Image 1 (cartoon, rainbow, N blue to C red):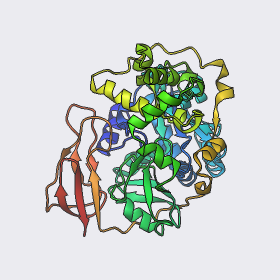
Image 2 (image 1 turned 90 degrees about the horizontal axis):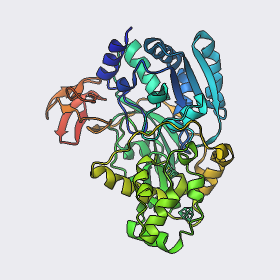
Image 3 (image 1 turned 90 degrees about the vertical axis):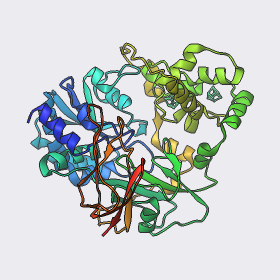
Length: 442
Ligand code: SF4
Ligand code: SF4
């Protein structure tokens, strides 16, 4: 197979990065890649998707990686898994000898090991330039579920219609399920036996970077988890605090200790983001222009806020707001020259997962969420039309149409970075809006 054909299949099948922002996978397929790196860091606490998928589908995933490696002409593929994921490591070790170009790389149990930029450094010791992409240093990074979707698209002709998602926290039977895209969070919670407490809030994603949502939210191609937490949990509080309060608290208590910068995951790779300098601007009114503009180089990992700051301040949230204002005003992070290496002190400043989990006060939720691929019974799905980065797709169905699993309900926009969206169920279209298509199951 050549690269054009591979891209065509991945685009037609709607394969997007199955985590993060949902970057269309076909656009990552470049002959610039010397290394193909499988990201099985799964570094957000409580998530149990990737380690279980790879333990179950190691053979399919290795086949997909071998194919991508061959098509791109890469030197090798690296399966980057945390040593702590024993079943995953065992499964990879069983299958890898059949793949001459593959090797296993054991990752440390640190946060955020799964940030692509951190992963590239930890596996091939190359620093991705601030504002750049892993491909700039010869790496194509692929998430575990994305690799499985590549396998299913290329070898089985299947489009992306379902998503693995961990449902955990205050639910009776935490599980990792395979849900049709568009399934509501309320259905998933019911499937897991319901909630164990009243007055809850829901985080869509991990506790570090996930967003606050409610039970009407629905599964997308990038949903990795929903975490049910008591409304008064500290993690929920970080998402509900008003900006004015965050700023007032920064003015009153930021002591400029610089711990946020010392432990900043990107600053340790010599990227120019400096949360302490940003907080100095916020709390003193001083306009240190580089400190403000360099917020564009923040990855949003949340470490400065959820772990580092001894005063419990909110640098990550404030940086996030500032960064989106800069973006709205047309500023983008200019790619800078790649630093030669990470900071010397980096190794001593990595944040262990166990300490992060304690600090977040989620030890009681840190348990298995076994994989259950039983078909989910639901009466309808509401499929979002914003599931990947790029131009929005163009709706291809109308109210009353009958659709089957895998039918296109929105086509990729022409001449743009864009992906189609497929129906995840057999049913009848009951509603079409600018944001979603609802299908009632027949
Ligand atoms: S860690 Fe907290 S107190 Fe220290 S400089 Fe950063 S924001 Fe200020
Ligand atoms: S969220 Fe905080 S720790 Fe993470 S990259 Fe941004 S400034 Fe650094």
